[in-house]
Image 1 (cartoon, rainbow, N blue to C red):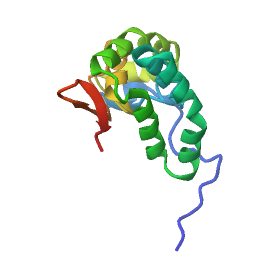
Image 2: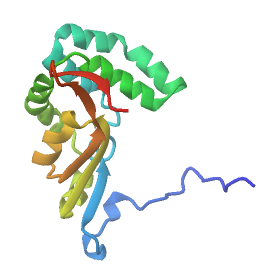
Image 3: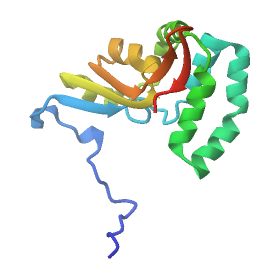
Image 4: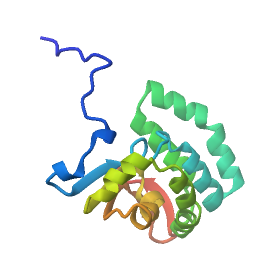
Amino acid sequence: MLPPRLQHDQKTFPLISEYNSSSVSHRSIASDLDGTLLKARLSFPYYIFIAIESGSLLRGLILLISLPIISLVYIFVSKDLSGKLMIFITFCGIKIRDIKVASRSVLPRFYAADVRRDSFQVFDNCQRKVIVTANPVVMVETFAKEVLGAEKVLGTEIEVDPIRGRRELLDL
């Protein structure tokens, strides 16, 4: 037996503009960053900023050149694998300290310019706020906690070589 087909115009959730905080008894929210709190659904531009700021212009160029390959992997193989590939190219061999500095100094400005106002109003009305993202936590945590007021950020964790202090492998 096949499941019923969803019609394209059928809504599964009410619009965010229909949200009424007085009718909701719980005061907690978990929200996705890309496409929900931010207007952009793709985080590639933020990876370019980090690659250039924490790595070099050459690393940013390599990431840009690898975009067609990442896109093909996204379409034909796996969304998860394409994200890991983008994270690997952006962060491999960079000191975690440099990633944190770039995440604090560069990204909040760009993220703040991309915040979706209606989603943020709902997010801001809640007391307990959690952000869920596919991006590395080290990349979004400063913005999420200091600007959005999130209590916790759940996302991709990256492993760091304790001897060299550099990002080595993804935490699968």
